[in-house]
Every structure is written in C-alpha cells, then in structure tokens.
Length: 339
Image 1 (cartoon, rainbow, N blue to C red):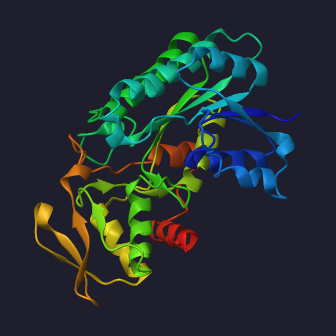
Image 2: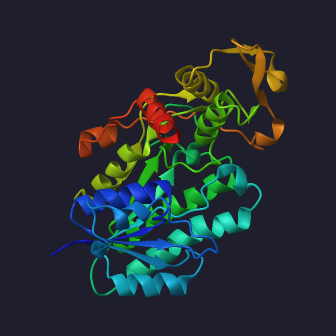
C-alpha cells in the first residue's frame, strides 16, 4: 500500500522538487496551495503532463496556514502518513514590511498543524518543518545544531518560534516531528525576487540587450548556497530516520553575493571590473567599459546577516547525506534553464 504524503507549499521551489522525489519513491502525494486569482502551479504542472508521473497519484488542495479549518479539513481528508511543511512567507526582506502576516503564517501556521497532529486519532503522523539558517543571524560561523539562534528579522524570529514548537511537541506529546535547518538553497525554480535568480536573469538580459543595469544590495553578505534538489532529499531522510531529530543541511562553504555575481558573470561571458566603494561601488564590463552593475541602499536589510556557513556533520554521520551539487554546478544549472 502506498504511503501518503501531504506537502504544504507544494507549488514552491522545494515543494515541487519534493513532490517529484516522493512520487519516484512510490508515494501518493497531496499538495496544498493558497487560492490566488492568477494560477501559480507552473512548478508542478509538468507532473500532471509528464509520462513519468501519473496524476492519479498527485493531487492539489486549496488551503492556508492562517486558516485552521482548512488545515483540519485537508489533513482529515488526506489521512497522511507524512506531512512536510514547506509553506511560508519566505522572503526575508519582505518580512520587515509585513511582520504580522509573516508571523501568522510561519509561526502560528506551524503550531496549527502540530496541534492537529497531536489530537489526530486515526494514525501517528510524521511531521517535517522547514527551518532556516536565518535563525542563526548574528551567531559566528560555522553554525551547527548547537549554535545559539540570534535572529535578525521577523522572518527569522517566526522560524525560531516554529522550530521550538516542533521540539516542544516532540518532547511533550511524543509527536514524530523534525526540523531541517536548511541553509540557502537555489535552483532553476527559484523565485525571481531572490538574489541568485535576479543576478542570473539580469546578466543574461544585459547580454541580450534587453536590460542595461543590474541593481543589487549588500555585495558582501556571505551565504552557504546549495541546490534544492539535494536539500529535498535530506527532508525525506530526516523524516524517515527512526528517531525524530533536528539537522543542519548545508555545504560547509560560504560565498559572498559578489562572489556569486563574479562566477555567474564569467560563465555568461562578462569580465567584470569592480570600481568604487560602499554604495558607489559599480561593476564595469571590461569589453565595453560600461557600468552594468550598481548598488542601491533600498535592497539592504534593516538588520543584516553577515555570514552563514552550515556544518552538516550530523546529517552526514546519521543520515548518510551530503550535497552533490557544487556552487559551480548550481550556477550552470540555473543559467542553462534561463537560456
């Protein structure tokens, strides 16, 4: 009999890759999406169309983490063996502008699911929570499962609440609940409002003379960037380990936004020279001597997170997980898809 998985946030980058993975493993997969006036299922449409997947085993439901009634209705109808909560207001910068909504969805949304699972009588449901490296904030790298959380945004604060809720329900009510503390992970399916996608799309548009300038924020913010394909594999391994626990998922390597831009620029055919300092720093195309990259303060956060590097030794030892994609592989994949 097929296992049944329920994915909140199935239309996002991670949700779509996870749905593919679980279908390949023989699951009956149900996904939850918010109802919107414009269809936003482009990341999962191919699952219905592909000869490799049968829509018989992939189902979509409308629901919202801010609505307990819809959560209860869907969980009761689907009767899942596993729930993966990947839904969130996931943009850190935007969380400064809509803090109440971010908190309701990210923090209380997780709590609502856990409370339903706690009282669920038909079976014991396993629960996976997508936690974030942003929770570490100001903590010195490298960060692991024992590193203190020092969040620097409402997004991060809401994720810390959700993280501790998972630990609490695991310890207080014996819920099989786990946190995957995922560091930055990208892919061709990354949203256009995230910096990696913005860099690659912008440089390609400049190359094709469809755009003149790429405007960025803090060039010196450092992140541990992996590929979403690798990271969804860790989600399944975390949840299907016999003992529920929390794991850092990362690459143990850190690159600045400027590093990422330089690597992508070279692959796309630019040789960038950097001139100036601070907000006046610009990236100049050596061939044309034209400025194609500049900095704007509006893209800086109110409180910055300077450097995140994840130590994934625990996941490697217990789950036999490690990343397969390097940063170069990731950038190649993203460029190829854009072209």
